[in-house]
Image 1 (spheres, rainbow, N blue to C red):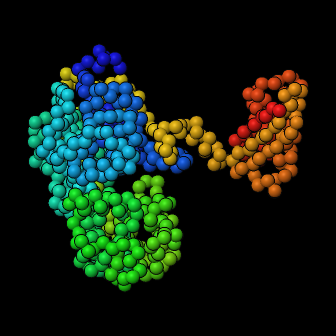
Image 2 (tube, rainbow, N blue to C red):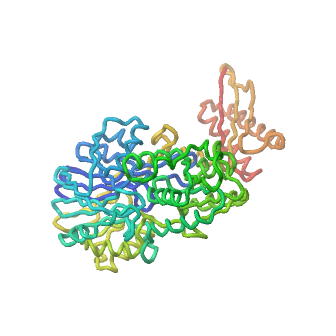
Image 3 (tube, one colour):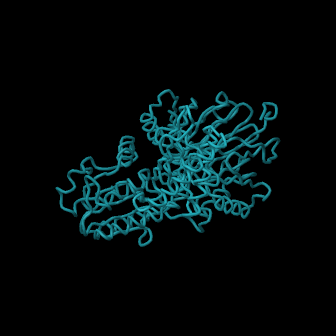
Length: 556
């Protein structure tokens, strides 16, 4: 897009968070001013072998860095802040977040050695002037304190981003959604609304977090031995309810899992978690106290392989061993794709002899995202002219679009977008605009973006059919075979039981080499292609498998 094409049009687009759960990153651009909202990560799917996390491709923002006035963060969950340690190494722009959110971000930035970023703590009454754009905020209710929605005033009109939200009328921390401010914005006029679609398929209102507290207290009341509660490290409301139950029933609390320890330390230091000073005990003291006097809070509610709860279930945790009669509470619902891992962990806990309480059998979790009636209430309060459902897979975005139409948004004013699609608004009229380059950047270890589709394809091939390495030594002077071919198999066949097959494969390679030499084919690339083609055909005919074939030719 050239500058004159852009002119004074308003552009709204997502770099992540559309047709997916996670990786949330949205941008509002007017002329030479860009405001970014959130910068999250997502966890890899089963096709992304060896990948640790996935972040948005921000090449468009890097190219237009002089126009980016800042990144505003709505709340402190990983799918909204997790990309910052990687993105801020490329994009040196100011960062704005509420107190708790900034505390969580600063810990991440310290670990990633990112120091030279201007950071500003905001609150619900803050006003930011960002070029021609102005940002104000309103309080929302979510499963982490200090969550806000954002209103960006542009010369075209107000663009509102809800952040993640639900309407909890009995919140644990008394952080009520600011209905009055939302209604005020609606009365003043909202040009375009971007709203969370996670639970758009779920009817009714999302339940109150306080109802989970009652269930936890009931579980604590009946438990005869130790209680182990696994939940999301960032769910500070849930952690507070566990603390309250420990205080009520006279249990000490041990904290297990690095991310859980970090979040509890930050939230306590900033005053978002209230607990007696003598409540927390060291994990070394768990076995020194009677079982009915101990509770443990831990990570691992999603069955992650190396998480604290999974290691406890497999009896491989260094500090905590689950014993028959212990009660394990999994206070979370499975993120789509994690069902099998969680099921395996629950089975293993039952085998040990633990009593397991989880969402299928007890009310130990409520979502932090609004269901259909919450979403309709937000739409009714803000009364947007245009609507863009965000934060969800396509079916969720579609369901949210239908809800918007049901409460009066005209169907032609609803835009269901993919990452990189732009909605262009000029003179109060909106249409789809030019595409912004974006995509997925894969993080593997310390490598950022150095693993792409070709590497993933190779990893998939290796995981399915293995690899054969063919080593041949040629005479530089005469072009004859001096040694080999030697065939090394990894993940294809077990050598001792397949000697005949590998001998035949050896003959295929030798015959191919001799034929090439007879035809005076001496280029290594051609020799390797011939070896690969002939051996691949032979092996598929014999085994119906296609291993990766890696020819290595040496000259002496």
